[in-house]
Amino acid sequence: MSELALTKDNSATTSASLAESDAKGRGCDDTAWALKRDWTDHAFQDGAESNRLLLQGFENGLVACLQRSWSRASGLNALPEARQFWRDGAESDNVLERAMAPLEVVKMPSTDVRAAVLRDPEVLGSALDMVGAYLKNYAVDKAAAVIETVLPFCLERGCLWKAKALSHLATVRMKQARAGEALETLRQLEALAKELPDVEANDEHWAFWETLYRNLGWAYSALNHDGEAMACIQKAIDVKEKVGKPASWFDLWDLGRMKAAQALKADEADLITSSQAVVTKALWLHRDAEPRDLVMRAKIWHSVGECSFALGFLADGRRRGDSVNSPAVSSKACAHYKKALKCFKESHSLFRKTEGRHNALTGLEAQGVAWTFMKLGQPEESKPYLLDALETLAGQQSGWGDGESEAPALLQAMQIADCILEAHRRTDDRDGLPKYFDAMEKLCANASSRVRVSEEQVAAYEKMVSSCSMVMTASGTDEGTTAGQRLLQRYLRGKAVTGQAKLCNEVMMSLRDGGLGDPAIAREHLSPEMVALTRMLAEAQGIGGR
Image (cartoon, rainbow, N blue to C red):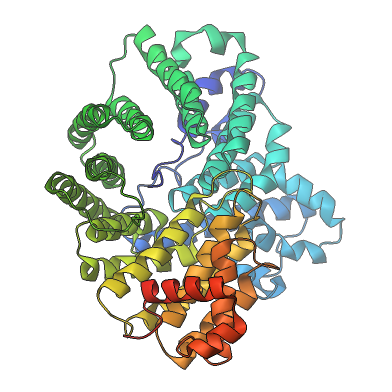
């Protein structure tokens, strides 16, 4: 399952560690704005609507800051209302660009005003603070738009501005599943810090180096460079030990989950068990140290559950021809899956309470609950969680990758579509399939707009689209068949490459011309080999009749 937590927010330790060095060359006001993070530091744990209203209020504060700066730069006492200059649909665009739309009517060259505004420390500091608030709410598109706008102006300034901007950029790239770019950005941050001898040598800056090495470890882990990842995590711990700081719950969680992931790759159940004990200790330590931090508690519950899920997978063995959604057979595996279910449900409940039903964290946890129900042979119980997970991915901004590295959101989407097919096949429930249609259409549109399909991604992308098409077709209705055909035509990019997508195309062509129910028609349109494959697929997915 995909990793929940991406990068630990580095801006707080970056700011505290570098502020003194940077302040030597700049005024106190400049440093104060660079250190601004009251929006970022808000807990955002009161539910989706409350979080949305808070973000809106913070955006309004940023716009007001921009308005003041424009007035100073342009010499105008008042600017026109920005909304009248917005393009259709601009509400989802970059808040900075929206707010600066009135520059078109300013008499001095708009590029000069724009540069003056974006060099204003109050604007820059508020914009960076807004990025942090966006990231906490997985508003990744908005966070990316703002950080990419202000980055050149931050890089013109002192090391504190550079460090904070680079830290935010790395976090954005990690949430986008662009780990290679995140790693490059973190290396730039490391080089920047090493240019300051007092920062590199002075133990007072241990928190900066501890967080930097930890984030480097997470970036390497996302790139499947396990050796480098563990080395960086060990460096983070060594930095703390050097100044007499004991291991924290975060250290235990980080080490435990990373070792468990490596153990799963090597099929080492004993190491997963020992790693789970470390993560569980982190869970109780965190509960005692941070009793109000429900989001982090939910993340650790997820990690404990992942260990139990992995142990269930290993205990059941890998049987030839089994689907990943096939129910567990052994009692030992079922016991592990029951523990995993308890953990995932606890995590999902906390995320839903604090982040809302369709936050990326909540959606991923819903998928974990659904998958575990499938492994326990309870497909009916999985259905509401599958719908929640699907609806979340349909609007999700994070995890789609850069076309070169793994795209967790794409793999999630593919697995959810397959799980839906399997759950409804096992329960002989065609009538329940139409409720997924709208979300699947939106999912394919979202993925199509975000995924740059390379050779590495084409199989997952085509399987996602074709599986969604098959869900629609499996409903057994004319509307479902038409919707499935339209989905393939709209979102399969050019000629299908993978076997499943080709097969799905041929199935749709057969249905359009008379349906698979008539063998003669199927033989007319398909080769004998494809007829046999189509029959097998139709029976497996419940397309060929009850």
